[in-house]
Structure formats: C-alpha cells, structure tokens
Image 1 (cartoon, rainbow, N blue to C red):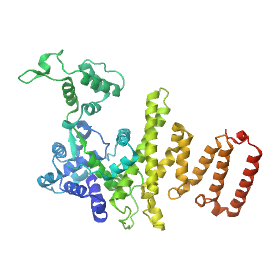
Image 2 (spheres, rainbow, N blue to C red):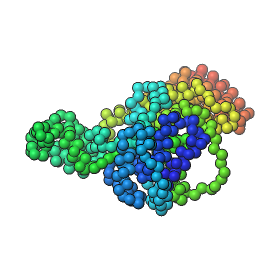
Image 3 (cartoon, helix red, strand yellow):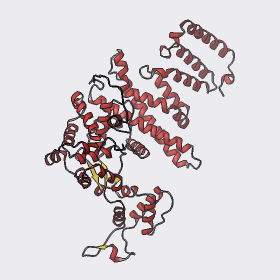
Image 4 (cartoon, rainbow, N blue to C red):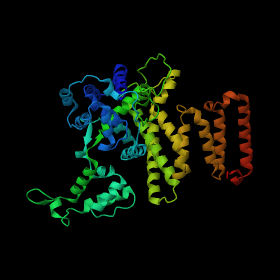
Length: 487
C-alpha cells in the first residue's frame, strides 16, 4: 500500500512532468525501483514520520509486516550503506513484487503519525540560518541534493542527537550513573550532560577496570563513555537523508499539486488504497503545465517552506504569550524569529511582483495560486497583525501598503486591507493622517476588486462625493483632530 502509493506518484510524474526533476533525482528514483521491497518499505514508513533520529524501538514493529522478521535488519543495513546509488543499483537484484510485503494487508493499521512539533522546530531552525531572504531563495532553488546515500546510522550521530532520543526517565538514570544532577526538564538535563562532556576529559576517578581499554591502558574520555551508555539504551538508530526527504516531498508536491505545505506525505493515496476514503470515480486529464519549468517549481517549494516556518513561529509566539511564567529572553527570541521571517517574506514578495508568468486568461488566473507570490501574499496577510504587535504600527502599515499596491493575488481580501489600513491611519491624532484615511476609504469604495462599485455604482459615486466634501469642510474648520481619534 505504501510502496504502491509512492510508485504510482513516481510513474505519473515521469510520464507527464519529468522535466521538473533533475538528472540526479531521476537516477535516485531508478535506484528506488531496484531496491528490495523490505528496504523500500522501511524507507517510506520512516519518511512519513518527522525528520529526526529514530531509535530501534521506533521502527521495530515494522518487522511484523514482513514474512521474515530478520528482513528488518537487512533493510536497515541497506539504507545505512554509505555508497553511491549507482553502485547500490548494480549490487541490488530486483526482487519479485510481493503484494503482502509492499504494504501489508489492507486491514493493517495506517501509521500517519508525525511529530509535528519537532518537525516545525526543525523547519524554523533550518530557515533561520540564512543571512538574507534573497540568499535563502537563491540557495534553496539552486542547491543540489546529496542523494549518494539513503539514510544515516548511529556512527554519524552526534552526542546531542543520541541524548535527544532518550526519554526523561532514561536521562535521569544516566545522570545518576555518572554522578550528575538529573532533575528538571529534559532539555536542562541534556544541556548539563553535554556541558560535562565538554569540560571533563577523563574518568580517572572511577574504577579503572571499567573504563580502561587497550593494551596500553588508555583511559576512555567522558564523552566516549557517555556515548557508550547512550548506545546501550538506544541500540541502533537511523535518520533518513534530508535530501531524500526533500525529494519525496517534492514528488508529493508535483503529484498532488498541493497549494499549502503538506506535513503528511502521500496521505490521500494511502487513505484511498486502504479503503479509508472513497471518492467518486471520474475521468481526468493531467495537464503538464502547472509548473512551466523546474525553476518555478523550486521557487514555489521555497515559498511553502517559508510559510510553514512562519506559521510555526507564530504558533510558538501565541503559546508563549499565553504562559504566565514566560521569560523575557524566550519571548525576545521568538519575536526576533517572527520579524526575521517577515523581512524575508516581504523581500521575496517584492521580487515576485516583478514577474508575471501566467496569461490573463481564466485558466491563467486560476493557476496563479501556484505562483510563489500567491503564497507570500497569504503569509503576509496572516502575520501582519502579529508583526504590528511586535514591531509597531509602522511595520503593519508597510505590509498593508505592499499588499494593496498589487491587484494580482488574493484580491478578495483587499476590502479588509483597506479597512485595517484606514484604522491605522486614524490612530494618529493628526490632520494629515485623517486626510489619508479619508482618501484611502474613497479609493477603496471605487476599487473594482472590492466589488462595491459593481453592486452599488450610483450610490458609491454619491457617497464618495459626500466624503470628499465632508473631508474638506470638517478638517478645515477644526484643526483639533482629537475628536476624530478612535479609542
């Protein structure tokens, strides 16, 4: 079921939209085609989960889906083999397809579990490492994926990664073994253990027969001993190559043509294959011009990632502000992250305004939702109130003015933008700001995108004339603008 969903998406893309994939991505897809079923099954199941390290207990239950439980260990070895896909393709014999092995029976419980909180945090951190929005867009659009391996084993895991896989109870037990304070939150315990690993170099004060190895009697370092204790608790572990996850997410985007960031991959196809969802059967024709070229696809992919990272930061901000024991340092960190996203999205939005790849036909207007600018407009609309609270009214005014300067995306929201911007102008108790608010309301009434002039043409014209006359007489007769302020 899981493998069928993946292969169906891949075959459809290769038939209609292969130009959206690079040569390296196509070669890696060919490697997946000759991979043993049990290894491909483990790859797909782990890809449906969040991008993190998975300990043996996290995927041990997948052995029940194989006719031979020992195949789970073989699948682990194949995925963690650090060889190029070309060599792997030559060494792996293509097995006969087994319907039961491809995804288990249709009665098997579907595992679409994702650690969304950890995934959102990873997305936010990965985006926030770039220096500027232009650099981020350029790097994300032109970078080449490293598809020379499928997954990473515990040999390449950092000590912080190993400690992060342990539960709080396991961390407390580990801290007691090495005589460190093991109380408090999980993050605090991990920080204390890492700090001790950096400051303590030997364990000479412990018993020598436990920590001395080799014929020369060399003493094991504290970090090595801590790593060994972690591995004793974890066993083997695995993490899917981030480039492979990016490729699978790209396949999901091309195949399903999702207008938003999808945290769950291949969910519609999996639900249909398992008969959890039944849709009416109708004949469709797949059009290959949703994304005109690969560059457009990559830019659209970047816009969805930025939107998802911005949404995660806003959710963190709302949760932190609702907490009574919120520290000033934590709040400032989250606010700075949101402002960084705001600057990057606004910069990319301005770049998107200079481009127009769609025609003005009805189909072209519909397909504009697959342009990066459509996503940036949606993101700015959602974060404008939060940015106004954090950075002041000037930043929110800048966002609304930028959105109103274009009539290309989300025109149905222009009425709300006019309304909010007029209120922001009227908050300043000056005659000049009141004149701007009056003028803005007049422009909004005549704006065809608000549909007011189409429904109430004559009435709107009379109302605008009245507003202009009222503005001249009222503001000229009284320079005291306090009466016009909004509480």
